[in-house]
Image (cartoon, rainbow, N blue to C red; front, side, top):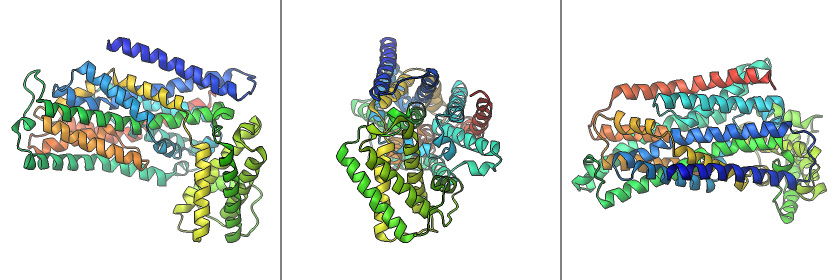
Length: 511
């Protein structure tokens, strides 16, 4: 039955993706002159969905480990159940994490994502992430897919900077990378501590001995404990889908914008009345910026903003350039009336102007060298919101495709990681209370990270949570496994960087 469900979902998902993509492209009315971009698009989409598939069986095994090892659910049913709630988690995700990941990429490659260098970037970082995930899975190590993807992105950024004669440090948005790094670094520590404290609290207030006993044979736990464990498994699966699924969605949108910009560079579904509001906000924002920075705009405002985003070094040209770009965007949108009417040859430029403006506003908001009065700040914030609504959107079919890939991945390959989590972290078998404590903490932390747009590792949070409960229970830890987990954690970032950087260098000579 599991195999039948798997094959049916695989065929249905691929068919739905292909039909939706064809409909979107056909509805633009643009004539196809060459098939090459669509071949590259198909390959890139398959690799991106392949990453989510690997992510599914690599990371989500953590969600089913406790229900399988406590005999709360049969393995086949558990992975199908977890896969379904991963699917729902992706469908109901906010999209904030998706575009937070993209902002780590080099600005010049994002602006030219449809070029050979853009495809080299996408293929390099995705293939590097898949290779490292598969390698750690074969060894049964719960390494983090999030950690791997971040390393791959940084590797491409560093390689791109070095290949253009700049220092490697200039190729990455280190402020954003540091923010992501802190979330990946602190989440395992928080998971360890909170899971241990939750277990101690349970012991203090819930005196039922069955909760702290190891499973006996293949006998399932009492009904109320079983229900609790199934609930936590469900929550972790949903949270994992809502957070990790977004990483694939962000990269797929980047691929779509580069290959078929007419269909995906701008949100064609925006109603006419919202376009009128967009133009009004753009005009007010330009006036506010000109008022506080009346100097003439540089001859190339787009280049000035690109340099500011890349270097993070504020200068006197930034605000006049931002005012000029804001005015250009407002004039273009006013001229065309709706995004549907933007000519195909202009779509890329309009979208790039919007992207640069949004990123510049994001950086200026944190730049101590710039201070806005209250009205200007309000206008700039409102304009960024309008721009993001126009460019940072995810079609339903992309969510469905990623959800199916992640859900299918959950249904296979789970056993290696489950064995590590269930048997090799502590010296004793996982008890019901330990499983519930670790998963409750993981579910809460991942859900909170999704709200704040931070990528966290399901693997790291849950594994450290299990270790925390073992320490609190004085069960003892298997230090050989802990050392292996720490080794994987330490090596993931540099190895992913090395892999993706090397692949990017290779692919730039192929595309």
